[in-house]
Every structure is written in C-alpha cells, then in structure tokens.
Image (cartoon, rainbow, N blue to C red; front, side, top):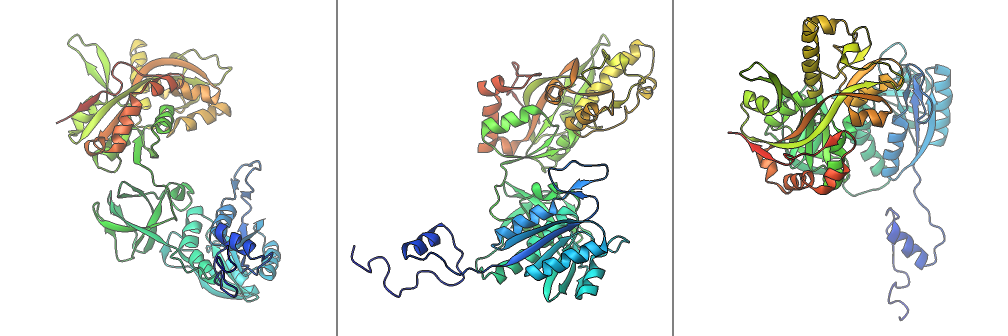
Length: 502
C-alpha cells in the first residue's frame, strides 16, 4: 500500500474524549503510540454499619453481607470511572471521619451507603456538615428518600441509603448520568421502551421510581421493598410515577427506563416452585421470570392476566356415590373460579412426603404430635395435600383435624418454598417438614413418601398460540424432558395433554 492510503500524516485518528475500546486501542498501536493521556475519575466507595460483613465471611447473628459496595463499584465502572473500595466502616464517628478524610484526599467523588436517615445511629449528614458543607438531606422520592449530599474538602459526597434497592435506584437515576457527563460521554445513557401495564398499581403520593419487569410488551411491578436486592435482580428497568398520580390502571401505556441492554425474559411464571421447572427452562431455551406465589397465587395471577403461565398442584376433595373421597387436581378449581380464557396443560407427577434429618426415627405422619414441624404456606398445593392426608389420619384415630394439628408444634407455619423448609431441618431447628423427594435428596435429608400428586401448568390461551407457548409444550412432551427429570418426578400418559374450558 502507498504511504497515506490508510492514515494521512497529520490526520486526526481519534477525537478527544472518545472511550477507548478494541478498535481505538488497535488504531493507537498502529500509529506507534505506546501511551496516551486518559481521563481518570476516581470514585471512593464505602459502606457503614456494624451489621455488615464482607461477602465470603461467616455471618454471625444479626449480620448481613455488604451488597452495596460491590453493586456501586460495578455501576461506577460501567460508567467508565475508576472505583476505589474503602470497605466497611463501623458505626463509630471517629472511624467514619478518618475514612472520609482519606477518601476526600484521594478521590473526585465519594459514595457512601447507610447512616443517612434521622435515627439515633445515623450520623452521616451531621459528619458531612461538621467536616465540610451539607447541601441537602432527604429528597421527595421513593425509593431513596434519605439521601445526603455535601462537600468535604471541596469533594462532592453523596450519602446513599443503606437499603440495596434504594441505593441502586438513586445511583442509576442521579449519580450515573453525572459520572457520564463528567467523563464526556455524549451517548444517551437511558434506554427507553414503551409497554402496557399488566396490573393495577397504587402509588404513595410522592415521586416514585418503580422497578418493573418487561415481558412480551407487558409491564409488571417487581418491587419487594427497598430492602430487597431482588427488587432489582428481578427487574428490567423502572417507570417514573409523578407525585400527583395515586393509581395506575392495568392497560395504561408506560415508558420503561431500562437498566442498560437487559436480557428480557420470554415468559412470566407464577405459582408453585419445582425442580422440574429448571429442566424445562434449560431444555426449551426459554427464559422464565419466576414469581413463586403458591398454587392459589398462580390461579389468581393467570386469571388476572398478570402472569403468562403458572405451576399448579391444587387438590380438591371429590366424593363419589359410595362416600369414598379422592383428590382431583386443578380442574375443580378452574370450574369453581369460572375461568374460560385459560388452558390446563397436564404436567408430571411428584412424590410428596415428610422431610426429616438423616438420623430421625420418625416413620410417618402419625409420629408428628409433639414434634417441631415446618409446614408450607396456605394456598400452596403441598399444604392442601398434607391437610387432606392429616384429616384422613385424624379420622382414623377418632380425632378432629383441629385436635390433631394442635398437637403438632408449628403446623400453622407457612414456608414459601421448599428451600425454606429444608434449611431449618439441616440446622436442627425443626424435627420434620413437608416437600418433594427431589428437594429432600438435594438437601441431604431423609424422605418418607405419603402421596403422589399431579403438578400441572395453567396458561392463558393467547400464550398457547405464541412461539414461546408452543416451545414450552414441545419441551414438556419431549423424551429429553422425561429422561432428565430429577428423582421423585415422572411423566405419565397424560403429560402434555391440553384441557380447554368454556
């Protein structure tokens, strides 16, 4: 090639302020540049609280892992700035002052989390005022009201709330745009997408940033409270709700501010949890957003159009002419609720039984009186099945259901998942629980079967016609699914059968 064919002498190859990526580094190397000046924006990050411990450490009673330091670090680096972790500082004013002075001398911006409210132990706003200048304490927004903004030695400091969702929402909405502007990033930071609200939502009369999921064009609240990190883990973005808006009706068009280029799920799943769902998701290649609400919640969310499909295992007692009582799954509930825009897809069978510590000498339901028991939540199919089996046993003993269950400590408890049943058993905090064989084997527990139930799927009719719905059905009926099911689960002659209702 002739000289100048690629780059002319004196030609500008990169504009000032451009972010250095793969192509830019290659261009710099090709013109012989060993070094270039880059903009360095140091952000100091610290978390406050005696209750915090670094991830990987051993939790003591009342302690939690420090999530904010690492989520904020990732956010800062995503914006192109350099994050500097100062770790955890206990609730001690002198220790806080020492760390804040160090950060102010080494960074261009300080982000702290925690100690921002007006409680007796929350001192960040007062320390900033004493060490520098307090500019603001509290903003009229949810989540994230207790924000502190100030200057220490001329360095801006933003004190974020300790609650993970509040902290990240304030960072995404206010701090990230500031960082990008400071670094000269001119590309649009916010990626927006329109959607239709899939459920009614009542606001609280102040500016609100509501975490939401966006699935097949429908928008669903993902907020579990500002203390729940899963509010953002289960969200694709957020919608802004002005203070004068008190109620948003399902069907309202909204604009979602996405958390970057998120991978949106294919289907919103509700209802009961099961190990077979993981296999369905893996084999189908579909991405599920899971809301484990129990079978009753699954029926409600699908009938209301909130969820696309639900896992249901709700038994109903059916009595024949001879007085014999048997269980019929899910169909009676659909008819009782008068659901017509749904399809029931028969799933697979699951072994249900008692979960016990490995050394337990309990042999069945009759041994539960006087023992510490972890039950499933009301509305779950597992709880309904257990109630039926216990009622049969109580009748055999000449007792009422109420009398028999009153003798079992914890029968009225309500764990929302099988994991929540297994953990107390492994830790020696309970003598028995209820769940599937697969969950028992996964947790290393003893299992005593008392029944086999039917775990089915409730779908909205419109979902059944979509490519995602067809892929779900195809996978459920496949040989690979039948062969891959974990212990205690099995397909049978009705697996994949579709029942429609008028």
